[in-house]
Length: 240
Image 1 (cartoon, one colour):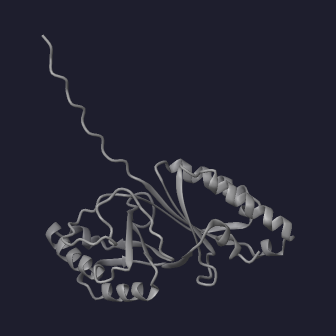
Image 2 (cartoon, rainbow, N blue to C red):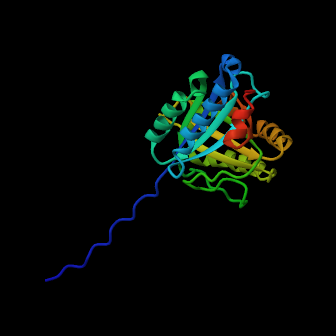
Image 3 (cartoon, helix red, strand yellow):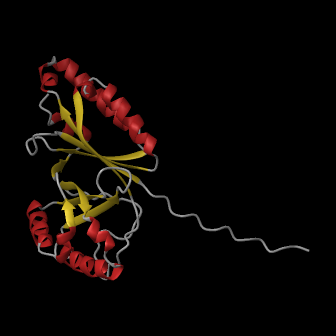
């Protein structure tokens, strides 16, 4: 007697690892001979490009904007070990030997627990895949809420998030990317806002300060303003 074939259970969609790695250059690097600086930059670029197809990397520069970091790599992939392997090669390059890492934030994609009753193409959806846009600027910061937030009812949380989402939709030029760090890093979320208009992001942050949910913000600093570049352009901002 034959038995009906069982339909295999659908596999859960894969979630992505996300990393924002900020680097600071030792001023001694700028005093190296030009040929050595050029070679070091080429080695750095090759170390990153070796992972094309494995890790999505978006380069940015914060030179002249922040004093504690100079460049940033926004990295997205499905294997945590690849971040480590890439970093090992980057730091072994001629340029990498002069880099420190003052900040590095690790997170994972996750479906939002909150219902968005609005629709807007530039706001994040309940997605597990990060899709960087083409905006000139990115604004990144780690985010923590107070423990009292997590003790609120889901209905209370949703009510405040509805207000938060509504404010976000007033600024269609700002694209939000949220990833989760619970148990992986010191923060609970990492948020990254892409926009061509820094003034709109400033107005958005000011408006969010006036929402009820802001009572439950524990920390949302440091905040990094970075300018998108190609890998070569990013390294050229280092002054060498």
